[in-house]
Image 1: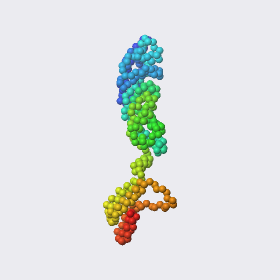
Image 2: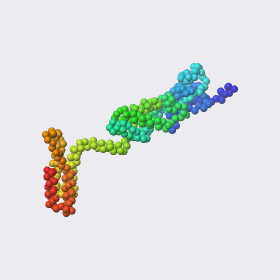
Image 3: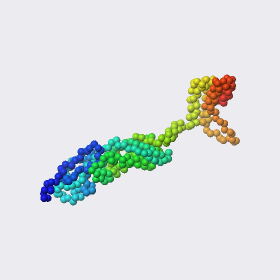
Image 4: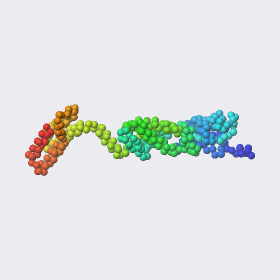
Length: 342
């Protein structure tokens, strides 16, 4: 009877795995009631690794190649099963194949804004996204912490865990580095390298190697982005007083050319000269060092505003056109205003 049972048994002579296109990372060879024939052939293709697991304990791991399974090529399994060196009977053991291909164009991002403490802005909420690539390097760690005894484990099942790992690493990176958000966002290449170095040890815990990471965008909420834009504009302007003087100087030719401007009011070149003097005096004062305080307090003199004088002349000219003011009254008022410019 024992002989008949032995004859009915099915033996496996070739163990191999042809990967599917569904992104499978780990796959268990279907044993059912079959046993592995001593001397059977194990084929591990390029971009694969294989691992025997005996009653839940990881045994021998194989890199790409062709192997004849004997007690010599299965030293760990031989030890676990207490085989004698001449043992040649069939055996049962779980065999897992792992894909070590590089998983390209994997997307990461913040599904919701994350809160960070920024050196410049204080507490801010930001979004970021990009792509990364990785491959499996340690089948034992991956089996023990990720795939377990599952018949198969796919890339899509792991995606959420890896994405959250990257986002957590990015949050820690901001907190530990102290680098302001504006510097991080302005140099996304360096930001990506810093994130890569931060996340690589976390991937290694799962038996994975993080090969590359690209930051494609870092953004702030709309209301904070407006504040940032204003700050950038202020930095571009620099000294507000000199910027105002520059704007006034540039407005003089435009006012002289426009219909209804200085030329229409008969101010023309004389007003242009007066404006030039005002601007020159203001810029000269800005360049001089602060004067020593006087013995007695002097009431401050309100600065002459070229824009106010131009606006007043335009209003007066409008009154002339409406017949409210005579041409003589307008000329007298114009002379009075031009004296202030001189």
